[in-house]
Length: 95
Ligand SMILES: [Zn+2]
Image (cartoon, rainbow, N blue to C red; front, side, top):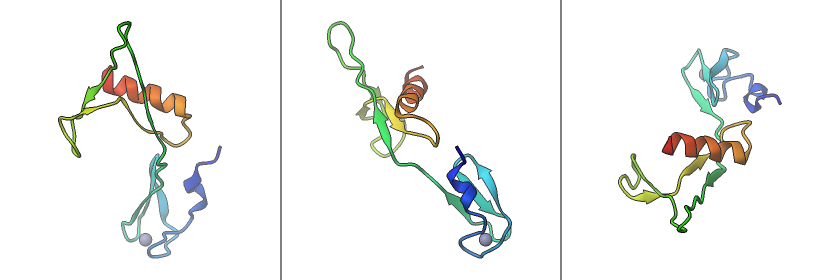
């Protein structure tokens, strides 16, 4: 699958052709410094129960709502399936 950012050849701010890959989610204009992010917004959560039907929750380490309880999960990255994204997030958040 071609990355969706491959179709953006010119900087949308200044029109420069020096619009290069910045990282997996963005391109950066070498002429004006503009960074364009292509962010998928689909998200997942995992409902993980133990034998006593207790639900696994996490405590948020960052704002917004730092310190409150949360379900493990998060945003799906480009080219990830929902299943791959939720598995990655659970591993990142619970080890
Ligand atoms: Zn530019």
